[in-house]
Length: 333
Image (cartoon, rainbow, N blue to C red; front, side, top):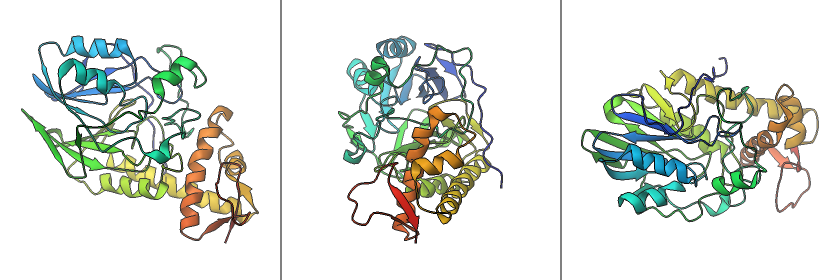
């Protein structure tokens, strides 16, 4: 089965609320980067009485634009897919301004603290040429302002915790929470019943693969979470936080699953030739990918190695190692 066909044709309209379906509108934050594509897409569900999904990073201009666009409407719910810094931090300001409760799976996981040394939401495993023609010059991860805006949302504490299958409804809309850990352990997708659509956060993105940063990121959980979407034949479209919608998404998600399994087979094949680190494996498996993306790719490879270790397929070469990193040497069992 071929890999996924990524969608890189997307024109952001920063600061403007754009209709994307009868029940959905989207405003894109001006925070483009090699990790966020053209920026964070904040979705608004409903008309008049609405729910807001992923208000975005610590960006006053984006929050102010959202409030202007929603003037005269009532924000009933603020829904959070996960607590990476380009998704949830603006929820606090939006809740203060509107009085709306914040709903999500739970606080930022302790194991995810410090995962984002490169960037706490590195969504690009390096599969696409993620140019941002027509967008603001992308920021880079060592820009202090970028780091401030995208730091993990360690203060996040939802007023209501959502579990798999929980329903949030309002006038004309019904939203079902889908627990989809993997990218991070507190990740939710939101199924909009009336439109047979899923707001997929960073779990599935049309423009790129999703990084699985250990130790909180979990490849096994991620593969199971892809199957959650595949097991919902009633859904027909995905709306990721970054980039364009994915139409008739089951084939796309199946291709992502196949892609991950092929990566795992490639890792095992590399270890069959001798002991290697995640970095060394990336040098071979990602030889055709830009060097600047090798570091985040190594984090996904490391997550695969941890999964394979749990399955007794590989082991750390140095017995008794207390921690593992992208430089740790692994061998096949």
